Image (tube, rainbow, N blue to C red):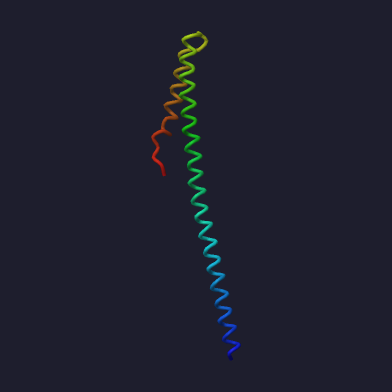
Length: 96
C-alpha cells in the first residue's frame, strides 16, 4: 500500500514538473515570437523610410543636374517628385 502511494506521488510530481517545463517552453516561444514580430516591423519600416529618402535624394540630384545639363527633362523631375509624394506616406505612419 505504501509503495503504491509512493508511485502515485512520484508519477504526479513527474507530470507536474513536466507540465511546468512545457509551460515555460511555450511562454519563452511566445516571447520570442513577439520580439521577432517587432523586429520584422522595424525592418519593414526602415525599408520604407530608406525608399523615401532615396526618392527624395534622386529628385534633388535631378534638379541639380538639370541646372548643368539639358539632358534631364522637366517630366523626369515631375515623375520623381510624384514618386516621393507616393512614398512619403511612410513618414507619417504611426508605429504599431
